[in-house]
Length: 169
Image 1 (tube, rainbow, N blue to C red):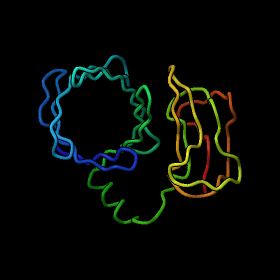
Image 2: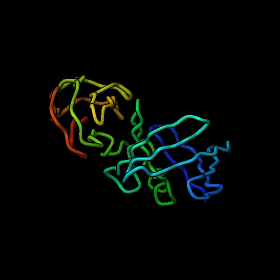
Image 3: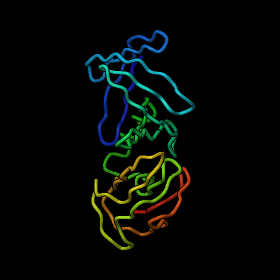
Image 4: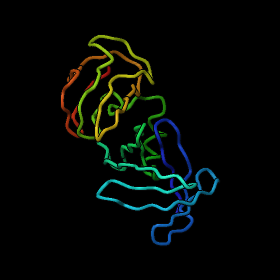
């Protein structure tokens, strides 16, 4: 079974080669990887790869086939790209998606620091906010160039999953 997966700004070809219990073998862009994956609880996975253990939390995104993956140090936005999604991407080449203009909290947490202000001009990749959740701090960055038109959070605020934090136009 083969998929395209967008992870932040990178698109990879992912093919499931074998699955036997917790053992999974995949090819990512043609390179084979084998890992032992256990679902610890709903949305929380423990991955053993190359004799190292990784904990990953998976939260559904605000669009179909989209997810937020959280590790100890990073947050990744992922999308499973099927034929329909490829069609939409090709039709909208050069256009900015409305969902990229709105920064949602992927999980409940506490705002550590808001790094932008209303009216400020931002560029793709610029840090916008740091949120602490489950003893980890995650930095969220702009997905588009633009101007901050709404800042709905402040340092110290508690945010819920899928809560709008910042809007860029």
